[in-house]
Amino acid sequence: MANPLYDTLFGRHAGQHTPFLHLPDGGTVTHAEFLSRAARFAHVLSDLGLQAGDRLAVQIDKSADALAVYAACAQAGIIFLPLNPAYTADEVRYFVTDSGAAAFVCQPARRDEMELVAKEAGAKLETLDTQGEGSLAERADGADDNFETVARSADDLAAFLYTSGTTGRSKGAMLTQDNLLSNAKTLVDLWRFTPDDVLLHALPIFHTHGLFVATNVTLVAGGAMIFLPKLDVDQLIEHMPHATALMGVPTFYTRLLDDPRFTRDVAANMRLFISGSAPLLAETHAAFEERTGHRILERYGMTETNMNTSNPYAGERRAGTVGFPLPDVELKITDPKTGETLPDGEIGSIEVRGPNVFKGYWQMPEKTAQELREDGFFITGDLGRRDADGYVTIVGRDKDLIISGGYNIYPKEVELLLDDQPGVLESAVIGVPHPDFGESVVAVLVAKRGAELDLDQITADLGGALAKFKQPRKLIVLPELPRNTMGKVQKNMLRARYGDLFQPQT
Ligand code: MCA
Ligand code: AMP
Image (tube, rainbow, N blue to C red; front, top):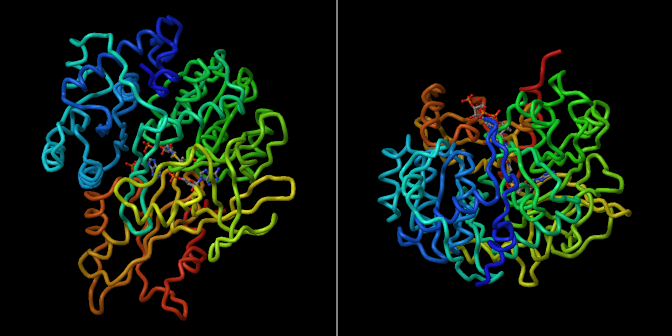
């Protein structure tokens, strides 16, 4: 029976004994092996009672098995909800509960911590690690490796990805099969992926970039991946001579450039370097070309939309721009106040429409209506302009958002926790330039009258509540926050004042 996502990404490779994943230990997983593992997981999930349309939340480390669970969800019609392993139990509780997940798979080492989370959410708890251990893996070992694919249509939901909000409450972006498939097919054509491609994959697989862009594109093209657990420059340099393409956030490229062993020779077999998720500095673009002879191809996307724009494969890859709208994506620049379309060259709100645009936020009709217009245009919250020759440049954000190493941090979420700390009157969380992560988190605190702030205690408290990457790298105490005449905190003044906090001292 038809299931476009499963058939197009996975099913088409049935019976193929060619490599799909090259693992860092030298092992290889063929397409056929991968599909039988996925089928086993699909049996386990349906034996657990999960049916098409149910949500499966997973917070596990990257591995071939972890990817097979994604394929299993596609095959069984289950909505896949991946979560960053860095999230604390407090953070996870919200996602598992809000999504109404029928089951939750966590790392075996965190089972005790997550038992209560799963219980409160009414979700079954299973475990899986990177060594093929854990209750889910054990069940899969004994399951049948042939699973009858559950029929789904292109409009059915395939995944929920949670994206934080400016109000501090995360929203579950509902992505359909067609959202994912249309984008993957478009990117395969645009970036000229073929079965000969070997993608160096060092991104996490719980976000759009590593899961839907990198993995789906490779699967649609029928290529293979060198599947590394995380970014490790030693490993990138070791494996690059056997790869043809790399996708990374800008930190990948700055770290490669920081290593003198990364040379033109190391990159000689590569045909394409792609960057996204955060702005790539023009100087990184130039330094990379000088070192390797390659011009990085920068593209722009979002959790809610997959990819929206890309620099051209054959034409000029213009540094500092995110290129042109994808062939099936309409993009307009609008006045943030009136929504009127602005002429080329003017800065405004970036809005996009196309088969890539999500269905809405799970159980949040008002939020959906605020951002997704009735005519299908999605208000991205990014500010940009389009040149006369069509290149789009992102100039800033209309949303209060920090992007650190490609991870999004919504200041409001951190501020709400800081404001609850003993002695804190108010707080402002800002992003300041950081040489490695692009931006880094800084918190500015104001104490209540007569109170003495215990910054070590505050840091420790935040540590228990927030994933490490969201935690402020620095806490600063001021007598008051700068405000405009309307009483609004002027974060731009704080950003200017602390802009060189992480810059190397000369
Ligand atoms: C790790 N740490 C971080 C970050 N990552 N801190 C701030 N920002 C980060 N991004 C912390 C850890 O908690 C740890 O703290 C220390 O830094 C080192 O941890 P480690 O795991 O070794 O970090 P790393 O391997 O150096 O990771 C940095 C990284 C990684 C490679 C930049 O964060 C990464 O892979 N980022 C990619 C994220 C991504 O895929 N984004 C796409 C989202 P301590 O040492 O103190 O314990 S999708 C998206 O944005 C849209 C759709 C799009 O357009 O793609
Ligand atoms: P997320 O919500 O994690 O999907 O992050 C999406 C956001 O990342 C976008 O709204 C942009 O602000 C940012 N982003 C993605 N790609 C780029 C890029 N190439 N340049 C600048 N910002 C980007």
